[in-house]
Image (spheres, rainbow over the protein chains, first blue to last red):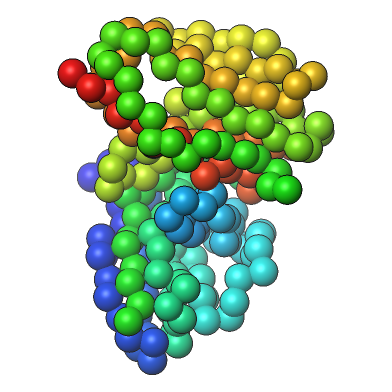
Length: 115
Length: 112
């Protein structure tokens, strides 16, 4: 497999459930990102990891908990979510988080629906 | 006021037409400008990247930056049905992937 792979593609969960989103990149990149994309809103950066260390946390509620066990894998653990958290969650990777000229490669996202 | 404004569309044009997609912004410190294309049920992909003002051409695509007007454009020549997608503008002050501000996207449809 090549590129950035996200699983699952779709997820429906209740507000009291615990679930995890998974992202895997096969590009040898050093940085990984989580974004939230809501309808008719701009992409919102949630977390940035560089060489497995979290370097950015954009005031994301604690019900979202990221984990980066190695430079190829990124998880987003979900707990006690709210209906407004329903959105497309995108994972991306790039070679260097300090260089926007290095393109971010996005996965196809997990469509999350909170009942 | 949003930092980056982008008309959501949808924009529908016939095949072969020239398409113009635009964004305005409020932060005069932005120096790096990008356009992403996002097909339905797919993640965004970087289409064009420019630094500061001027034009950049890549095949049928031309990115234009006018910093004095705080306005950027993406032109698509000889548009094809395969160009139907949502186009996101993005920009940043620093060359840092974690500081990119995205527009909300314009949905484009090319009619055969």
